[in-house]
Image 1 (cartoon, one colour):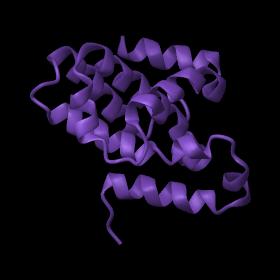
Image 2: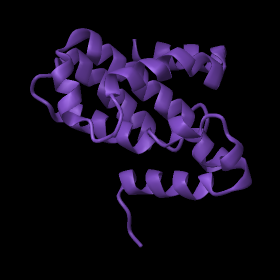
Image 3: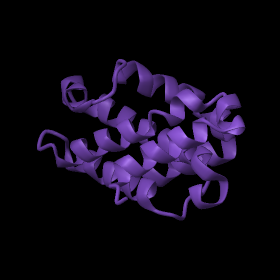
Image 4: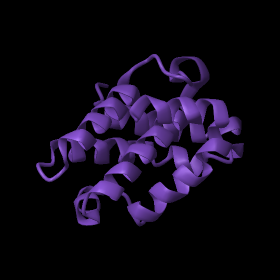
Length: 143
């Protein structure tokens, strides 16, 4: 069955969450946000109201999501490898939140909870989730 990237992420994560490892992961709730964050980044990249400087960061985060080569590669560790993608997406969306009207972000959010709160929560736990070394590398990638 041929899936687009959004559906692939969603399927991979949901399947993994049914495993013993997935069920016991304390980061499961953040992994479930990966497809919605990817969708949001895609929508923001196309929005005429998002400044070019922010779009450059968004493009970098989208490329990172799609790339098989990243700091925690999904091909090696499975869906838990999306944690760095989730953290980077939140960091970039947080930057957009600081430099744009929040309505731009909320109009594109397809998730259930308040995106502004979720993004801040992810940024707040990212160093614990990934370790300081990886989190610092990710932040340097988009500055």
